[in-house]
Image (tube, rainbow, N blue to C red; front, side, top):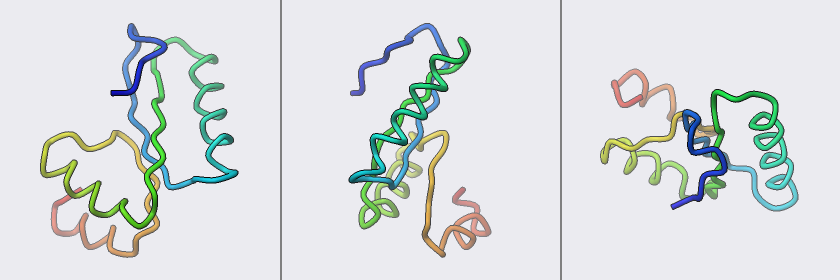
Amino acid sequence: PISRQFPDRTPVHFWHQWTGERQPLIEAIAAAFNRAQERYEVIPLAVPGAQSDQKLMLAIAGGTPPDVMTQWSPVTGTWAADGLL
């Protein structure tokens, strides 16, 4: 489990696909947002693109999807139309 810095805030689980040199930038943006307000705690998690579809479908099936996710898969519209999202 990811350790929370602000356990009294509403958690917002944010899965993203930025890795490598861009991952620290995304984490810095989330940290800046968390410092700028006192209601939410954005908890970023890098999910490699090759596993993102499977991880998302398993999370939805298990009842624990992220609150927010960047997703580049062209099948996202089909998932929404089929009621999966």
